[in-house]
Image (tube, rainbow, N blue to C red; front, side):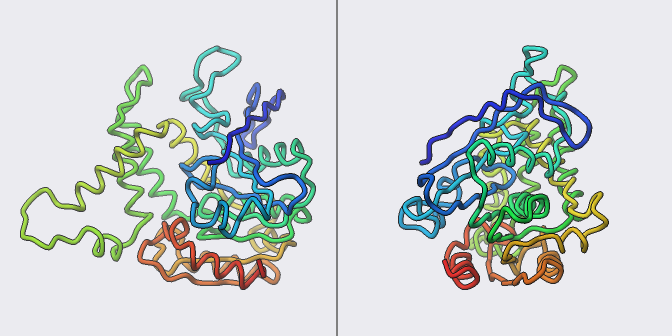
Length: 332
């Protein structure tokens, strides 16, 4: 596992929505050495700054992204609970955890934090940036903000603007969490468990459940699919902060590269990096039409479709197919 490092910026952090954080700490990993091509990985909703932990098929010794070959950087996103300033952090102005007072975060705010870290690390050129889902949203936003910073980008199972369908899924999850928060702000973990159970339905596919949870015996209760949903909910509630989940899901909702840029087509036309877009044929949360739009409107972009039985989560699991696309499109 990569060692977490912390960059305390020591400066106020001004956010797109108008709020200001008194200070910002950024937790990150930086492996492979400074004299190698930089691969900057952006993580998705509930992941952390160590991609070798949640993307072990692609990151690590002997893998495609090998620290013997690349300098690999990944920053925990603003609003998370894995080291970077978020709702569970202590507000220096009050001496208490931010909790519900933590301001609205957008994908652009996350990118602003990445840029602060990039400059702190003395990086002025990124060989490749890659991310899936909300990680891909960050990569795209950053490639529009700093078009000449990136040589290559890979956008996995993401979009130019978060859809009403995706926002509705996120709102249903937040409603589940909020139903378990009392007047004093105490969180019942059952709310986060229910939220994660809802999320799993958007991350997977009918095929996934049919393959993995199908019953081979006659039952009238205690179904495998039921226990699986409860297991997934419990697993997340044990490792993640409910207020961070609310914050980050709202940040995903905010994603819209065309905002204040004259619309999506113009924003996408600003990308200068060589771009590989990857979609998943069973993804119901970020359907292929969204990746096709990216490939059609980013200059010179390519589009590849991966076949997976795992729906949206295929971006985390289909290592071999992702590697094949990257090798083909970028000659890695």
